[in-house]
Length: 156
Image 1 (cartoon, one colour):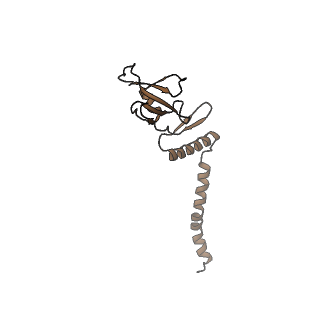
Image 2 (cartoon, rainbow, N blue to C red):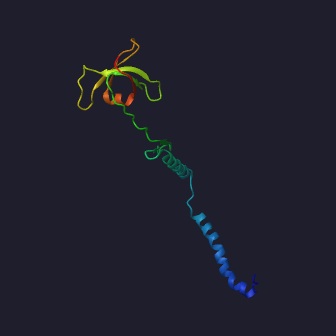
């Protein structure tokens, strides 16, 4: 270790002071030049972070809706893919007639011979339950394809 004379120290001190003070002065200047984040900006920043996390989790197709009047944010994951099961001839089918996640029903489905097939809308189907007290139900082909879960058995 070499010792510094007073003269060497005074000659090198200004350069050392500038080098040592530069990062601190730059950090101080950056801190004071940042715009002040108000509550609305903070909410939107957090909402963007949440939305980016949703996109990372669910993938593309997420939506963020904002009501400009009240500032309410709604995050929507992408819709689930539509399940399409084709009609495989008359027989017993398990259907989600009342909606996804609710108990399914077993219905006997066959093509309704009274209604001719439409070129755009397709065929009509008639569904009967095992319970004789229930009425027959009619389904359009495009709708039936989305609510069929699986075919249980063949023609009765």
